[in-house]
Image 1 (cartoon, rainbow, N blue to C red):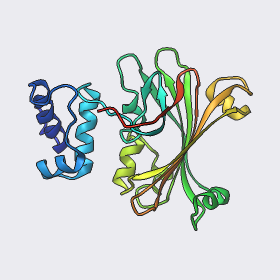
Image 2: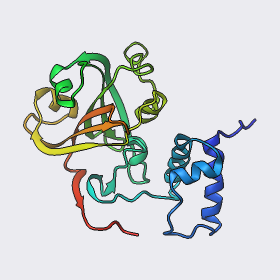
Image 3: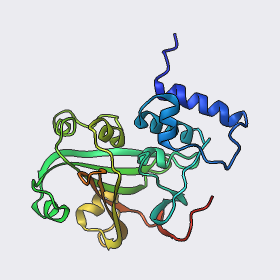
Image 4: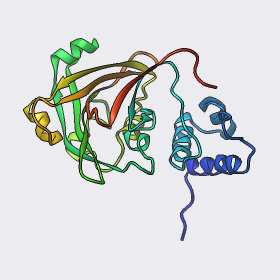
Length: 239
């Protein structure tokens, strides 16, 4: 027996029919999240989930405008969809491994972010290519210990994508800052990445904040330069 489709699944199917049927020609932009939410009478979170399904099916793609962004094997990473969906293309199959989920105190990071409290929930993960087990990234996500998030150290992350967990906790990044540099990995990092101490990796430090400036997430990632590169776009975005 087939279950009843969820709201975002019903919306994605409607939009998929419109795209495949030609009523939305290739290259034409879809209406914005706000307009789609009004059309279907749902939240923007539901619309984002529907658009993520269309992206996974290869029916739509997102375009990065001005600013700095990171490419994985030539594909822009769209953090709004989460890492797993961002690299979900036929020629790239990756698996994520959660190393630790714990509560931690970091006074230096709290001061850097302008926070009064220095308590975070830290999620450590690596990602590797399914084809040969090459580890392509190591990340530490520092999250505010709000309801839902502060339960993670006790119950674990399970299979829920971190992006969806943040939305469920009421945390959605509206704006932020990302800094990128190159650095040699230390002994512990080299062990996790299965590399040699001193090998160079890209390091990104990304901080996301809500529309009111509230802290949402701080992520430190080490990225294999053999698969990632930094691109700077400037001028008006492509139509």
